[in-house]
Length: 233
Image (cartoon, rainbow, N blue to C red):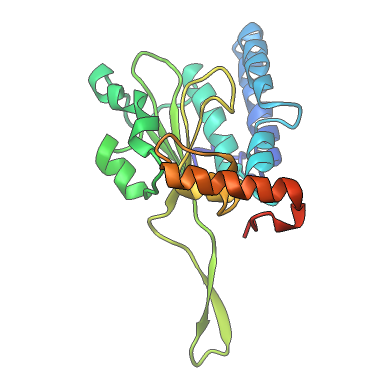
């Protein structure tokens, strides 16, 4: 977590409050009120529920999304000179990050594959890998999502929770005018958003004629009998 002392939070809304209040105080002390208002205006693109809102609406209302909110504020803090990062990418290093939709396609990848392809992130905010260009432009974020798995512990008479040390990437956020346009979903992200039948209503460019025909048949069945909808889980 990029957080400074006093910026610990347990949820996305809490993180937004803490990070926003700290930013307001810093800008006030440095007489940068106009810049602070500009930041507030730019963050309105996430909606009335704040930065946390789109993540909860698209993926899971129960998710905390603390890291995602913190990563958005990390970019803001860096742009205003309040946060240093480990690495800034020069134009040659940044170029591959402008072709991420083609790179992702309809597959899954893990955090290790991202770092092998694009190098160490400029900043890691919990489960989010952030890449910052040297020219001061918008960042690219790789959002990883690790679901807790429970396994029985032999001889202990209990279950233990475990985390994947190399989590899957759920989505990538690329520079765009709004949240939806800048969201690139991995296969895992598509299933989290639309369920395993995502391909029925959200066909991809690589879908075969056979798959398109099957999807069309399933859509017709749904229109006749909604109880036959493909299960989400």
